[in-house]
Structures are given as structure tokens and as C-alpha cells.
Image (cartoon, rainbow, N blue to C red; front, side, top):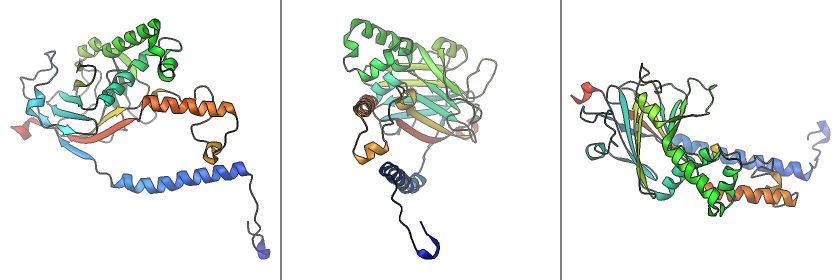
Length: 306
């Protein structure tokens, strides 16, 4: 602190405050280093192909024939094909990483479609909806599923997990947002009810990897209530996401955050804090890293392909 003409006076702050200042300084410095890298990252651009009449959504098909006639775009851990017609967007997702597909089964796989100018994650379909989500119907099951390595060895727990996985394949979660104030909280609907609204989802898997087909109506209509409201010829943002951390409040027991001023200094306030940090680290190791990939897709028009 400067004291007029008498020069500088040094005030020693309490050690705990010093640690906090050092911690936030490191965070700020890391942000300055990361932001330029993010700004230089280019978005993958994909051109959709106009769909042919014989690939009708009225058939309960997996759209696998599209994989033989359309461009395959590879991302980290998955690949996809995308086509559209005047009424639907068709996305065929292949998981090439068994670890990624395991996370999708456990925590849900989300496909987001953002119209031009829309808020991010304005429309989303999560399928499979995730074992973890449906374990919320059983008190304490989500916590045991995440934190106890031998949780499924008990017959009653294994039965709950099997029921949750069946529900995960029979229901999808939807998000529809018009502005930033709308909540991200998804709502669950059976696949049959979605099909009645012209939104079709089909899953093929072998327990290691899987293929998910989405046929999503472009615009809202009498028989299409759940749509991203997009049109052929537009450029949309297509997102693929698995985010277990968003689904679980890591500090739900009121413990210390994962990184605190005490952990940054290498010391712990108490055994309880140390135990809580170990618990959070076990959860993070259990759920793995979140997955997020975005591409820009230019929807095709009938005129362009004629």
C-alpha cells in the first residue's frame, strides 16, 4: 500500500487469504492462456445430402442404408452421417470407442440441434437417456452406483440397474428452449409417444459399441410437436454430448469443493475435508471426462441436388 510521500508500506495478509489470491491468480492466468487457443479452433463444417424418397421414416428402419450412400464424418470417439429432406433431419451416429459408448449407456447421449441465431442447446434429444438418470427413482441408488465399486454385486441393486437400463432404452429426454432464461431441465417421453409426433429413434448395439439413428422433424406442425424449427438450406449447429458432471451435484453432501485454498497449499483443514476430496476424486474417476463435439451442418435442398 502507498502511504503518500513516506513510500510503500508492506502489509502481510493472513496466510489463508494469500493462498486464495494465488489460487485465483492461477485460474485467471490459465484462462488467458486458454482463450486464445479456443478462439483459433475451427468448427468442422459438413454438407447434408438431400434424402431420397425410398428412405422413408414411416418404416421402422435404423437408416443404416444411409451409411452406404452418404459421407461419413469422424470425430473423437464417434462418427456420423447426416441427411435431410423437406420434413426431417436424419442423423446416424456410430460409436467407435467402447469406453464412450459405455458412458453413453450409463449417463445418456445427447444430440443437440441449434437453429441459426438460437441459444446454444436450444433443442436436444438424449437417448439412451442413461442408467444413472433412471436410478433416481430408487432412493440412494444413484449415490451407490457412482461411489461403490461393488454396488451391483448385490442382487437387489443389480435388479434396479437392469430396470433402469430398460427404461433408458424405452424413453428419451427432450430439451426445448427459446431463450437463455428457459431451464435446461429435460422432460422424459416414451419412444412410442415420440414416434406419434414423427420423431423416430432406433438403437443397435452389441454391449460394446452401438449405432443410434435419429429422424427428427424440422418444423413444428400438427403431428410434430418436438422440433428444432429449422428449414432446408439453413446452416445449423449440431452437437454431440455426454456430460455426467452436469447430471450430478458433486458437493451434494455439503463438503468442500474439489479445489480449495487449503488443497492448493498442500494442507487440509481436517480429516473430514480430506475424506470429501477423496470421495469427489473417486466420482470423477468413475464417470470419466465429459464429451462434447460440435459441427456446423448446411442442410440440403431438393433444388440443390436435382
